[in-house]
Image (cartoon, rainbow, N blue to C red):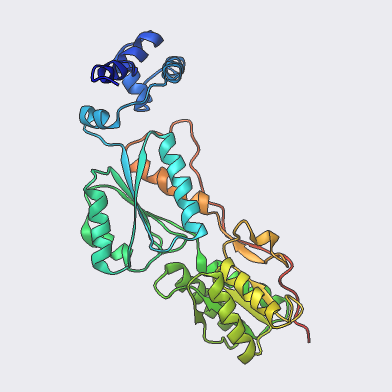
Length: 344
């Protein structure tokens, strides 16, 4: 290829003026469509989008940022451990952002140490983000965000937490209490709890729910075992607990630990729910297809992510005219075959 071939090829790339010419509008109108301006007639916007598709025009994000002094970029601060819930919330938030013409830039925490949290937030702010979504299940993140007083709107996406104007969450304590109450209603009184990691808000609130409901039912709780959300931990904890405890039911802090625990039950020649009942939390897609199908607490992760992004876009002045505000579904106990009355 000769040196003169390069500018010739570059010249073939369609420009914003080519789109305007094909659509029969000004290039300013094309720019408004690209930036999702609400001040356009629907038929005009549709004509411009058809021209963009026909020409395979790709807007230059850097040029748009320089021209408008806006990056249309939202930062996402994620936890160091990704769970089904975290990934579902982020995917839903990203879809909502794209529909509004925004892009996401991600960084995951290396650890929950304060210096690492601050460094991760500084990394996002340095990219000229216009807003921040913090998927913050770890206890240290929220106070650090408050302390840093960022110059952009912040929304905290967590499936639990205190009621604040900037947080979207579910009541994990209530969900855990419903799980324990279901087991008590079946006749169980010796109920164990396998909890998540100590520094995760979800783990803490689900453990609180277990303890609160056991107390409300006038039952003696066993000391919760702190895990790491993994099926492997549920399996290893199950092998140990089944040798040393006489419990008839287990409430696991998430579905993956419940899955590992059920594996341990089978590994020692016992069965679920005949010998021991098991309840999980989250209702991951596989929960209905385990054997036996897992009783669990379902939460609407996608709804939480959508609502958090909706609120952040509102903070940024994005109009939601003609759209209904997404509200996450309430937590629901899904009863399947992994729970039954104790075998007396």
